[in-house]
Image (cartoon, rainbow, N blue to C red; front, top):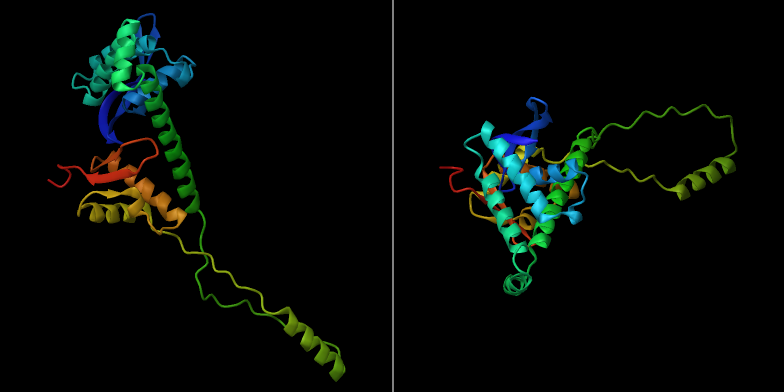
Length: 262
């Protein structure tokens, strides 16, 4: 699966792709869609039925570079993210091929392993992608539920005709009815803010400067937080904002792109 046109998701270029299957006369092209260089790497692993933790730097780098060469035949103006990732993979590969002594010295200086660095990045990307699918499914499922507006008239109750009773029996029945008490009336919450409205709200908030996702969703119900997360993804996809995270599970910072309103 190889890219052909571009937009932006999570700071990574999203691309429309072709699925190139080897054939006797060359490649058979089937149009598909996937996002960014990390999705290409995930695709290469899934195609070969490999687990992320079993990745071999030299193999995945070679397959990625071969895919990149084919891709450039369809799109000479290739997205910079794909070229940057290719350079990054080559750097990781070169570090892994260093003599053991030099590799250990370099690891002490940088405090990371090139193979482990790639594994962490791929697992983080896959985790965010799966989370986005789950959140979108939950949010879209909520739109099929209609809340009951408050203040609807009560259903009319028809009192059946009762046979004659003594005053004592009626008084006892009255006391029993009082002890049961009234049933608690629960009102379903109204539907939260639609994604389109939340997108406009985020634009207005970020126009004043960068903000953390936790600040933007403080005090919100879970459903509204999901809608805000989807609105954030949509703004990233449209290239209006940039989302950054300094470390895994760290705070998420949102800010408008410099040329978004220019």
